[in-house]
Structures are given as C-alpha cells and as structure tokens.
Length: 167
Image (cartoon, rainbow, N blue to C red):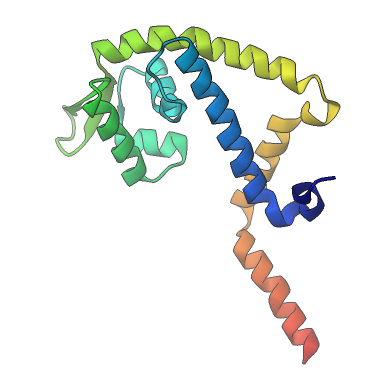
C-alpha cells in the first residue's frame, strides 16, 4: 500500500487531482501524436458546441460547472485562436452566443475519432480491474453527496461536538 492509499480520505483531493492530471496529460499526448492542435481542457466547450449550434457563456458555465469568469476566459482564449466566435443574441443584447468558427468545426471533425477512441479505451481499461469497473458510478455518488451536504459544515459540526465533549 502506498502513501496515498494509506491516508485514505485525507488525500482524496490530491489523488483525484493527480489522476486527472495524468489522464489529461495522456489525452494531450494522443492529440499531439495525431498532429491535432487541441488541448484536453477545451473538451467541455467543444463537446457542448458539437451538440448545440450556439450557447451563451452562462449556459456553458452552468453545463460545465465552472464559474462564469472561467468559462468566459476559456471562450476568449479559443476566440483568440480563431476556433470560436461570439454573436449578440437577437432576444437579449447583453447575451453573447458562442459558436464554433469554420476552423473550429474543422478541428472538431479531427477530434471526434479521438473522443471515440478515448471512450473505447477507457471502457476496456476499467474492465481490467474489478475495483475500477464502477468508477464513474462512484464518482457520481460522491458528487451527489457533496451537493446534498456541505462538507465543510459537516466537518465543523464534528469539531464542535468534540470541543463540547472536551469541556
């Protein structure tokens, strides 16, 4: 058992971050090896726009669970790369609609086979270890639990009970 496994939930965030960084690094190596100028961090925006003609920055933010400023920053970055464009909504002049440019759509066509290969490969990999077969369901369960209760409040309650018990 390694250090991270021994510490269990105390290092959950660190383990998830390490796993995420390793996963995204491998995906980015795949894009590089295929000669595709794409970064895995762009995936949520490209995926959502592959399913929708246009979305507002708020819709992107809500769908991906990131802050509005973070979504806006990513959109600006991709606009600077000429992969996205924004237009003003006809119903609300304050609302900017995000769309793929012609170059963005061409890039999307290149990355779609990579997405399918990632999906197939991950499905194969999780079936090589019985403990990993339920990974996505387990992550979804933890996410639901985090939405249902405030982790920090629950921890603080436990600390308060111990302080009262020590008096």
